[in-house]
Length: 299
Image (spheres, rainbow, N blue to C red):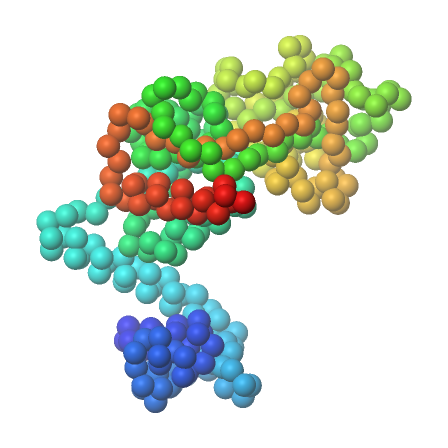
């Protein structure tokens, strides 16, 4: 197996034809066909179904394609690192810390687009919660963070990158009893039902949306929080995108609590320290995200 053969195979899949692949990688069409055929003969498998108008992946070809893409990405990263080292420059990884609740579809899409556009930049991703996200910056564990405004002050430079909608939810069988015929649930009705919170520690006091009285359970992540609420063991404020399916399938229902922020929306930010000199890789990411957001900001 040779890298040129893999590049030819990937080009055929991504461009949709042998002719387009040849143009994309600046090879002749016969050489591209021969490269793919050589791969198939080497392993005794059929990668592409050539009976239709355009070549399509077989089941074996699909599995081979996914691994080929990963391998070629690693090769490209290694080649880029080699050029950096030859110039006396050691490549630095991009260290990102993202709030657990901030992994919305638009933000995940930006991360994926960045990786595909800059395969030469190694990405180190960690998650944390509330003030822990900003602590990663202060303790120099991360270059850039993405999360809500918890802990932000004049030490930080930040750019809004999205919105997050939060909703109070509970098991559907519990809601009628909690409402007691009213439209909104009185806070006293919730005192015996645990409010489930995602916290870094049980002593975590960073939460803004908690009842002044009542039972509280602390868990480490939103999946645990969601599981407990769906089991009817408590109630919680949850990001809408995490519970969309549960609401549609009736495993959870929205709940309005009297004199409480039952439903709210707040911004998410890309954050860095004001007095920190960003690495080249971090600067590339910062500019990339701002450019990706520009069309939505102008609309």
